[in-house]
Image (tube, rainbow, N blue to C red):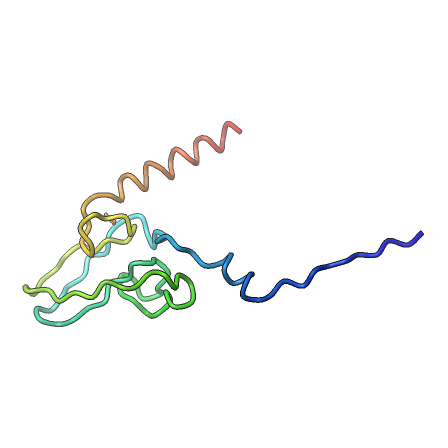
Length: 115
Ligand code: FES
């Protein structure tokens, strides 16, 4: 007897949806220190997929279509800490939420050792 492998074609749109994220993903676990120019417009990456962190490079349009960048114009020139973990409650600025992300990752890692 000969086995026949049957496969069901999956539309590419279905596959693509499973790879896209609807929630931001951490780009890094620590904030980015950047110098901003007063009056200049910036687009902070909200989705976490940009290769030009912490700024948007348009990756959200394919990786996370439901998420848009946050456009902002700083009033003062100077160095600031922009969020990289994408969990801040004061976007685009770091508010220390990355400590929760680091803690959550550490707990997950430790639990993995005891499985
Ligand atoms: S890097 Fe996101 S809150 Fe600090």
